[in-house]
Length: 202
Image (cartoon, rainbow, N blue to C red):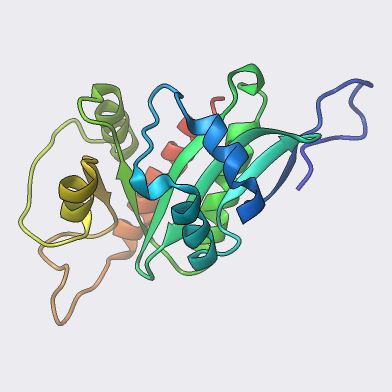
């Protein structure tokens, strides 16, 4: 994908988006390291990320300007839920549509595989992220329910607080007659649109 237009003046920045490959991992790690609001963990090693890309081919993305990597993002799924994380743009290249294009790339690639739920990982004490999740969902309240997901593994093993998001009502989830209402799917799509719009502000 090429973020360029033929009618733009000479000298306009051109960014190329393409699926992240193993060869991009060192540059992606260099971009992510030390970036505010983004945490790297042992699983984010070169070997760990290479394995992730092999399990989720074509879903993660990089943005380059010439040979320089200016943006990167990871995306994948477990067959039921999608994961979108480590979406980042180099400071000098923000607010130029790069973040928007990367998020749209990842969301389109994951949803094209029939995935309708996503996990959002936030840093401990990140009240801004919690407020954002509330604004995306249209809710100002927080609560808890009793059920099992991999969220506990992220929390206990990696130390990453996890918010589980998806359509439906927990009362119907994980039941023999589990179902979703069309209105619940619409609400989930609205949530993801708000999330994308927020991420695209850069």
